[in-house]
Amino acid sequence: MGITVRDLMNVEYFRDFKVIAGHKGLNREIQGVTVADAPDGYRWKTEKEICFSSGYVFANNPDFINGMFQGESQLSALVIKRGRYLEEIPDYIVRLCESQDVPLITMPYGIPWMEAINQVYVAVINHAIQIFGVSAQSVPFRPQAMDFKEQKIQKILRAVESDMEFPALLYDLFENKSYYSSDHFPDITEKYQLQESDYWNPSVPHSRYTLCDSIHMTRYRLLRGEAQGQPRISWVTIPIIVGGAPQAYFCVMESRRFLDFCDEYSMRIAYLALLSIYEQIVALRDSYNVGFEQLVHLALESREEDSHRLHYQANQQGISMEEPYLYVLFQHDHKSMDIRTKRNTVMDLFLHCGMESKGRMAFLSRTEGVILFHTRGNIELERRQISAVLTEFQSKMTRKFEGMEWTFAVSYEPKRLSEIRLCVEKGRKTLKIGSVAFPDKKILDYNDLGILTWLDIPDEELKLLLDDFSALMKAEKNRELLHTLKVYLENNMNYSLTAEKLYVNINTIRRRIEKVNELVNVDWNNYYTRIKIGLMLQFMQF
Image 1 (cartoon, helix red, strand yellow):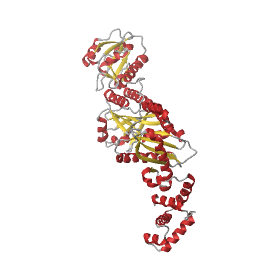
Image 2 (image 1 turned 45 degrees about the vertical axis):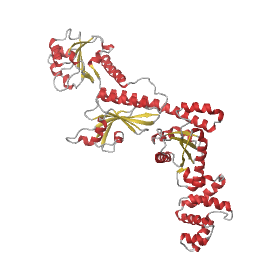
Image 3 (image 1 turned 90 degrees about the vertical axis):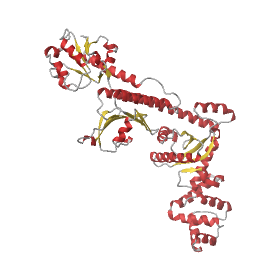
């Protein structure tokens, strides 16, 4: 979409340009500019152009005007500079423009062509800026109040379709949510059997052409549209990138024709408006996350006299001190890496899992962090949802940080923020005991540990147990030994009873226990050692 002739004439720069005929066509749309002074210049006219002329071609070739009105490509307006070759505009030109409802405009003698043409495009840009609402207006502070964001996006997309007459899409990567200018876009997607991801990463045969390198503005065209009798299918996509990370994809569907010059202008302006929204959202999200992290540390370290300050900061972060939350503690095993130095990367992965709407994250130390999930009361439903997003998050983290293991401890017992210290301690215990009981599990539920959570095994002893029995667990052939040892301890180290329970010969049991003793150094005469190992074996999976 460009600008109407009427809107152009209302621009201050064009105040001395006079419309002398064709007033009924003032609502014609201008989508391009041409200068015609060659005798056969009309051959290259296109639709919706405003044509500038010195009058030379009309003075020397009166029939030129007839060529300008031939064919289907109609002019938007004709502008003639009076005083150079024509002192007065001939009546036949005035009558033809009047009959065709094409505005005939005279322009001052002293204005250069380039200046006038530039001002047409300046008017187009200013019009687009007004339509798409590009301004210095800021996003409200609370990023969880996304109404503002959605309203602005919808306004821009609707303006794109209304002004440019092309349906548009914005796909938000963090929310995994699509915004449409109207129902036309999903209808076209369904009609051509496309997936939404095809608009930025086509999975079908296509060609691509870069319209602008700096903003990665690209036209995609499906090759099947080149076949005889098949409709052309193409679209233009621009990624919305902030801080080097894609936030969204902005796409305009060319379902009937290509974007023209002014349409590309408008799409760039719409892109800048969308980019501004996401830059503000990302900046505020970053500061918001830092504020939340400070709140979590205050809650972990607070004493009774800090109660007022804690309530105040919680209120600033939109956290209720009365509402219960579910807590997830996560850790990595790479002691040399400080997770806080990878804050932006981890946060991006967190948001890409759609977790922002479900939970909030804070880093506690070099190796661990905590996630608070809102609870709605249906714990079983939340268990499934949280398990799904944590599985995706853990998988993304493992792929992103090669050579590192990430483990998560979940407690599905809702607790207020004032009880977060207890929840973090439970999480640490879950990871500590779980590393022995479930060495292959990366997402551990506190309740799955059963009575093991009652034990307080010193770190040194736990490490010894972990080293010995983890090595046994890694070899499939040793799992039979562990199962035998478990039953053997359950039956008070009685070979006969163990053999009966396992339906094997007593000598087989003796050989297996001797093999265990070769692999691990355990004092079976120590009652407490037997109890700890027996409990651990109860919950190990083999």
